[in-house]
Length: 319
Image (cartoon, rainbow, N blue to C red; front, side):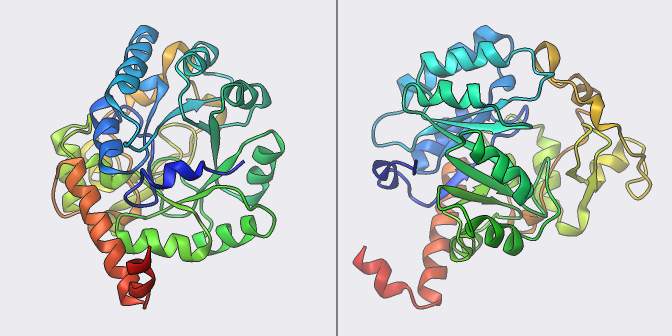
């Protein structure tokens, strides 16, 4: 299955806004979709379960046929005891796209396919990519080195090349993408979409502390630390937030991956580290906190300028 052709006319730029734990809320998703990018949020951001249904009702009522579609991120790890209830609501409200994380499940994919929904699964290497497609995922999100949150270590060049040797379905690239130039580069490598998360944290609609947004604006790639201490899965985090918590970013202990816990509606360990802030290496491009629509407008402008710069101006004019 490919991304519906009708969606292309609703996108101002080939971008998926990644689901940001705690931070992505309907206000941000609606702003993203109305600006022409696919907005998304983790179902576990809505607590209790009743709030998740309220959010789906709001998105379905406020987003129209000319807006970009939205996506919901489902954590399919066995410790997420809310998965099946969230899945039932996604089917009920016919969520256009589902992004699955931390495992791949055939039953989840089949449920989404029952109403025509599309499943994108995030992976950090080619082996996991093959497993996801074997279990029925329609598309893949290649989480390469430099991505925010739970990131891999493989170069985006290598990861996209390996996946495209055998997979011709929808493919998004995550990893330090914060400019329109980077979105075009992702397409040049073979991806269909740029997958952008950290840059959207520094938007007015994002549910993030002002200090978090300001720290992104003030930081660069050298301020990113890779560790599995905070969730049990390796990810990238802002060095100043680790230092502020009284820890040495260069001497962090290693966590037990089996300690991951998404039970009772969310990662309880993450609550203990709520002021340790995740972020990707692309944040040097983020210069100020803006409304999401203005951020998308910047991406679109940079994307078209990049196309013209490498000789695609004539092709662009003909589109």
